[in-house]
Image (tube, rainbow, N blue to C red; front, side, top):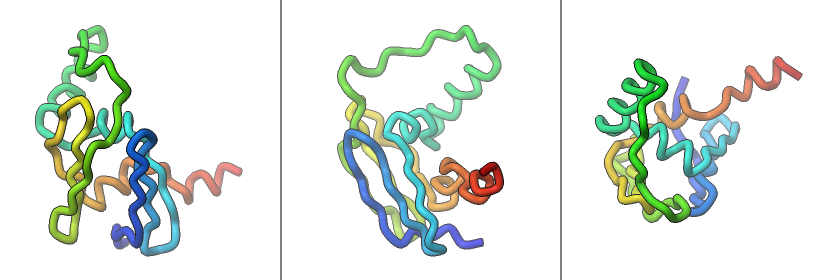
Length: 110
């Protein structure tokens, strides 16, 4: 299976719309993209929360979380800068697809 997007549309305050090469579409909300950042520090935070669900999360910002900037990384990924200052982590096409709801599963549920 190929994980290549045909079109990306960033709505800074809402999220990322992706049209995949196979014709399916996905929407990833800004807060979900930030929470699931593939950066090392975000992965460590998720592991800590899995091990200790009562862990206290640091407050990253008081304002609304928005996407500040998106940068293409080669022909395989994007890098997203968020309004809370987080700008590390490379979102590969395969990783973005894994974050998106499984359309085939949704079709089976109806």
